[in-house]
Length: 148
Image (tube, rainbow, N blue to C red):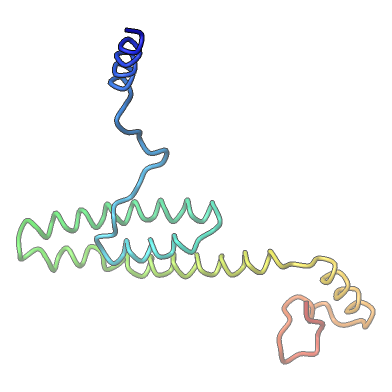
């Protein structure tokens, strides 16, 4: 009898539990357009949280634009060319965002290996040699200025 009561209570508790839980963060649908896919590719490489946030915002806006383009193109076959003209100005912006994200990733990688002590020593060597300050600001490979 006690076993029966326990089984009945366990059955009632199981019936009250939810079948699934909501995600903690929103999930995007798979990229249905090349522009969204390009931004998604940039998102996979972005490690900085602020860059990821900007790319996520951009991906959402581009996805809305692509959805509007698809709705316009679905209406009439004659409006397909018009729908392509909608996304044409956005394509260079997406490529710029992707290139900028990649450049920021390279800079982040360089900053992780930054040795401030080596920079200070190099600056002290430049000052000891009395090299011109303009040579220190933007070092080039062709000059003999102190390289940081």
